[in-house]
Image 1 (cartoon, rainbow, N blue to C red):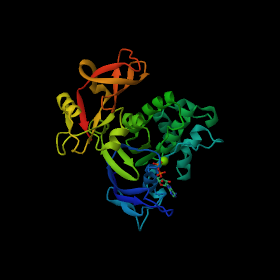
Image 2: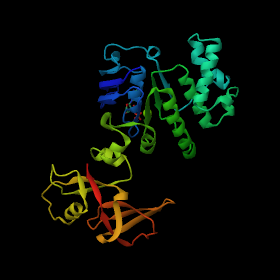
Image 3: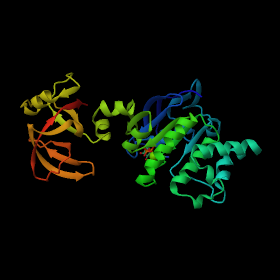
Image 4: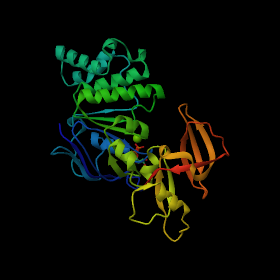
Length: 343
Ligand code: ADP
Ligand code: MG
C-alpha cells in the first residue's frame, strides 16, 4: 500500500465544452478516508473512474506510491490496480447467496476451499452480516445489501476502495446507520478510501479529509473541521454548514476573523467606494440580544431542538440564527454577530 497521488489531473470528453476535470492535484495518504464533495456534474465520478482505470486522463497522472497508474499515454488496466469500486446500485447476483456473492471475486481469482471460506467469513464479520451468509439478496434490506457489496469489495483486500454516492438511494435513518458501517469498515480494513458525495453533512461525518470540487476544479482540501472553520472562497463557504454570506466593505488584506465591534463598524459604514468582501456568518455565532442591530424575521423553521431563523439586516442582507424561544415571522429582533470569517 502507498499513498494515492493525483498530479494535475485533467479530463476532457470529446463532446467539448469545459473539461469535466480540470487540473486537480491531490494526495490521499495511505489508509486515509477522503470525501470528494461537490454539486452534481462537478466531475466527482470522472475523477473516481480515472482512479479506477475506467477513463484515461487527458492530462496529468495518477500514482500509487512510486507506481504510475495512468497518464495521457499509458494506463494500468483496472484489474491490475488492486482497487475496488462500490456503486450506488449494489450489483449483487440475485441467484447467489450472500456468501457466494461475497466469495465471487475470490472464485474468479482462483482462490478456493478453506481459504475462500475463511476470507468470506472475515469480510461478512467486518460488516456484521455473519448470520446472513445463506440468504439471497432479495431477502435483505437495502442497508444489508449495501453491506454485502462492501464485504464483497473487502475480500479482495484492495489497496484503495472507491465509493460513488453509495448511500444516495437509502432513506435518512438508514444512511446514518450506514455512515457508522463505513467508518467501522474503514477502521477495520485499513484501506485507503475515497468517498464521492454531494452531501456536505455526509462528507463531514464520514471522512478524515474533505476535498471540495466545483466545475471540474478542486477548491479546497482539509479536515472537516478546517473546511468548516476556514473555508476558502464563496463556493466552499456556501456549500458547508448553514452559514450566510454578507457583502461588507472590508479593506483588502485585512483580518480574516472579525469580532462584533469589527462587524458592527462595517455594518454602520457608509463606505461605498471600497469593493465589498464576502463575510461568512455561522448561525451559532449570531446571538439574539438587546445590545445588537435590528433584524427582521423573514422565516422560522422548527427543528425540534431549536428554531432556525432567517433574518434581514437593515440593509436587506440575509442572516441565519438559532433561537431556543419561538419567534414570529415579521417580528423585529436584535442581534449581535460574535464572530465572522472573511472568505
Ligand atoms: P459528478 O459525478 O460530480 O456528478 P461527472 O463526473 O459525472 O460529475 O460529470 C462531470 C461532467 O462531465 C458533466 O458535465 C458530465 O456531463 C460530463 N461527462 C461525464 N461523463 C461523460 C462522458 N462519458 N461523455 C461526455 N461527457 C461526460
Ligand atoms: Mg457522479
